[in-house]
Image (cartoon, rainbow, N blue to C red; front, side):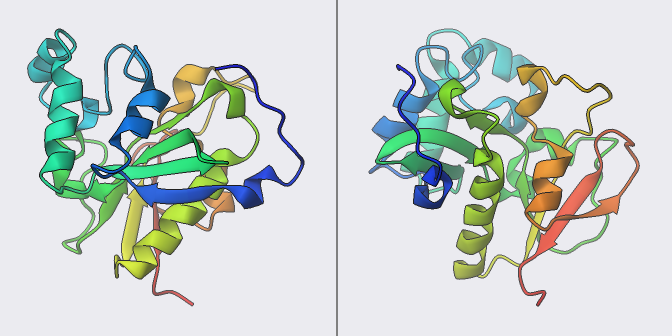
Length: 201
């Protein structure tokens, strides 16, 4: 994809919608031949390590994600600019993410039902322009419509000024802070647990 001409107000033109059968093709277009990164297809947080590794071959992870979508399971939110898919954020009930449920660092802090944001993927032509914050705001609006009361995330606080793209997939602390998220657990100093309560005025 060639870098498009982006006007100064393009963030206000972004639209967001959950991944469904209807927009599956746009999700595939965004993720491309590499499945976003190394044939992940956003299945890494959902599978056991061995199953994920096996799924990197023969489009296993892609088919696993498609199976979730076809079953009507919530998987995440797509972001669009002029009908072009440019951003993705995994968003589903925490229990759908096996890696989180087994995490020693990001254990549940209470028994309340939460929906988690474990990862992002933004088209390289649109990175570092505020898309992630706008995407988070779109997720908050979606959560409110769907009566989802608690959104939870586990972003990184970089330890150096220059940030590698390899850190961006879990989200940056500052992006969540700008979107109104607050730290609720500091077990990991560089990857705090943050929450947004949609019913909070």
